[in-house]
Amino acid sequence: MKYLLFLFTTLTLYNCSPKVIHNTEVIDDNKQSALQEKFSNLLNVPTDSIYNLRLYKNLESWNTMKDSLNFQSISHSVLFINYIYYKHYHIALPYTYDEIIKSKKVYLYRNTNYLREGDLVFFQEKDNPEKSIGIYLKNKHFTSASLTGELKYYEIKDTISNIKILSNAKLYN
Image 1: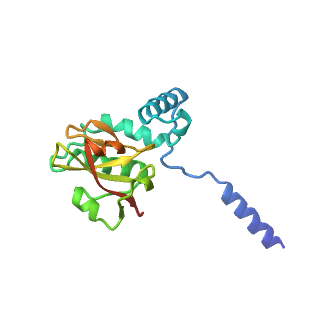
Image 2: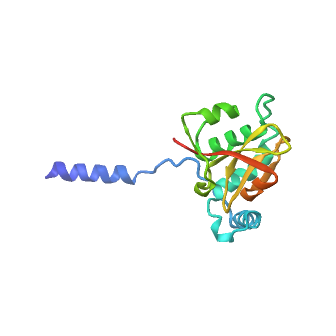
Image 3: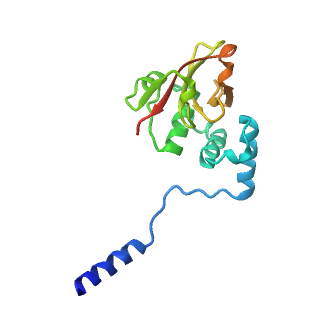
């Protein structure tokens, strides 16, 4: 009986010990409201539907990081996807469009109705021969880095006039 009591007490103390928590980011109320307001207007959704604030904060941080991540041989859209996926999802992706689309981590599909926040969108702008990769957000909207590194936001319905969606993808961990 004493042994069981000792074991129970030890396990209880072990479970109550302080835990190390990594990657916790606190966003103050003003910044949270500003992020929600900005992206709800951009994506044409209610403010309270923007709840994955860490993802949107990472999108915002791209603007300050893009200049320091200057790799000449990597397109900005691939660099952007690598940055977001590593920072937000802790997934390292290959560094070229072709390697990403052929990766064993990637499950390709065509139907845009199955897109969920964080899925990849492989596309090509009509006036640009370079293929690009974007990240799906909400409400038939996705974003990608332009040739200059600035974030551009697209609507799926733009496929008629401005862009051609080549494929979509979900990632396996």
